[in-house]
Length: 100
Image 1 (cartoon, rainbow, N blue to C red):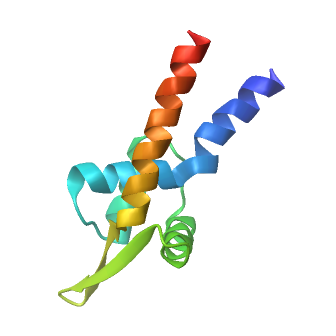
Image 2 (tube, helix red, strand yellow; image 1 turned 90 degrees about the vertical axis):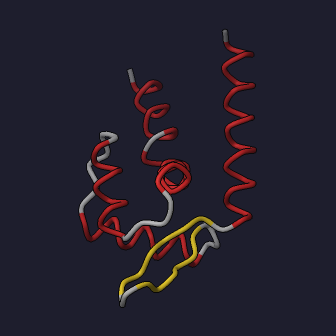
Image 3 (tube, rainbow, N blue to C red; image 1 turned 60 degrees about the vertical axis):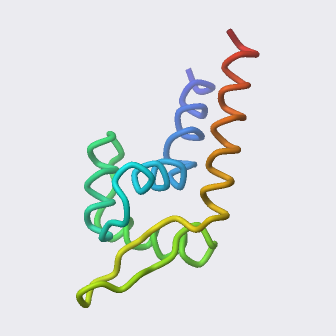
């Protein structure tokens, strides 16, 4: 059913920022490749190149910040991203309550 496929795309690939912020919330700052590996572990078919493009876009959008450590970049969520992440979780919980 197409409606279900759109739903899966919307809550999955369409909102990867939620998954990235969740990963970083649980594990702390990570290198880009570690984030890509975690997304793959969650079932997302993310190429390494796309993963780095995604991270750069998230930095440009103010979702992530980069921190240099030992000559490598680590990514961590911004305060605003953490606030929006919590708000998104609340909205999803409200949606589940309304639909249940």
